[in-house]
Length: 111
Image (tube, rainbow, N blue to C red; front, side):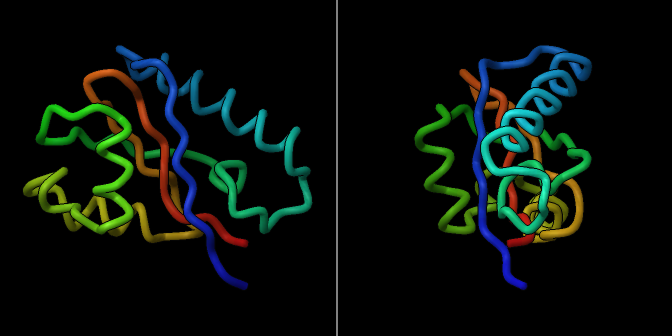
C-alpha cells in the first residue's frame, strides 16, 4: 500500500484543547466523506497529532507550498528533522502547527 499527502487548515486554534477539537472534527468529516474502510490517504487514517511551532510568520497558502517542496528547515528550524519525520510517517500521528491565520494538520496517510 502507498501513501497520500493531506493538508487541512482551520481557523487558528489558540489552545491545545481547541486544536484537539478541530482535529477530531476533521477526522469525523473525513470518515463521513471517505468511509471507515481504511487506506483513504486522508486525515481519518490518523488517530492523533503532534504540535510543533513554526519559525516564520507566514499565511497558510504560502506554507502549503513550502511543505510540498520539503522546506522543513525553513519552517521548523531546529525542529525540522522531528517535523519531517512526523509528516512522512504514514502510520504515525499528523503534524500540527499554527500559521499567522490558521491551524494546520498535515502529513502522509496510508492509501
